[in-house]
Length: 298
Image (cartoon, rainbow, N blue to C red; front, side):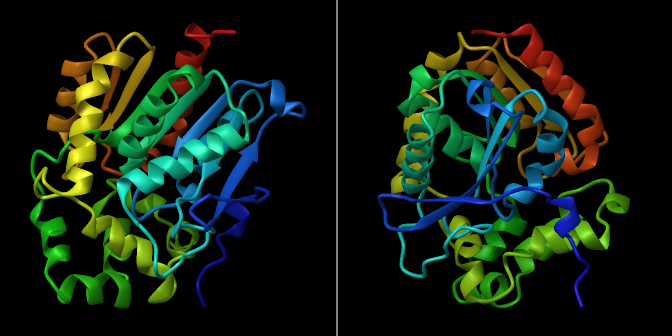
């Protein structure tokens, strides 16, 4: 029997129906009058879900409104088998949530695929966002595709490996962290919990399938479009927090962001991997608090 992860995720669930017809799950945690608190929008990647952000939510919800969605197909959101699992659709879904909750003066926090989805949303609704915090991510066409990811795109093999055996999410438990002692049975169970069957792993596979090897694909074009507009966000306070032992979103991705945003605050964690928040949440929460405090806006 899998370890019980639920004590690590003591949050109330909320849902809304997107215009695409699928039901999205999200957290909405904050102080008693959270409608008056500055909102933090935390956007996950693949193969994680809102569980990945649990320690930041616990560390920040006393003073900030933490809104944490699960992308369609992920976490506790609906997992339709016939759906447009592409970057632009995920951006549209996220923008709908922001508008539904009427979030203003939002700080984006994003990781992995959440960087492209989140910045795409900021570019779509720039008047609603005031600050950006990114963790080991990209918002541009991939400069390279690691062989471990490319192998997951091999026809038939990739789909069976990811949807059939959950190898993508299971491998991440060891490959994405530099602190194996933190991957307790409960944490592992939490990361894997929503992805417990072929059908429930549909988005894990489709995210991998959506990685563009060329800019001719729709998502390749969308990523190029997002990158071409990153300069328009350079006047916002930005913090880049990076696990430097990430073999996927490595230092070259961080440097690419720094070229677009030369005044961004940068924090490099030499001892952390891709799951940087799992590796160093006790150091990251104070950093985020300091960044939010010194860039406070009404």
